Length: 28
Image (cartoon, rainbow, N blue to C red; front, side, top):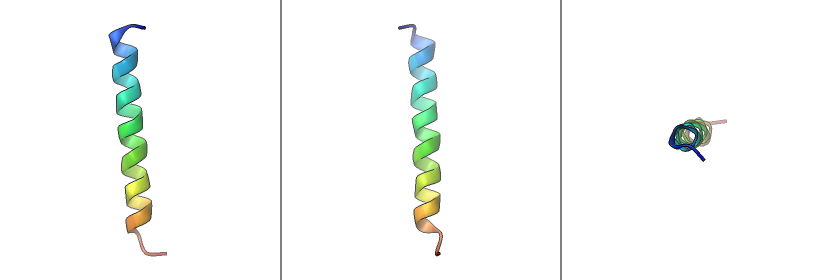
């Protein structure tokens, strides 16, 4: 597995985690 694919995976999970935090923080 090339390094760039691992970097993309890390960025993807970081973005997903950020969106989950935003959804949990917003009052519903």
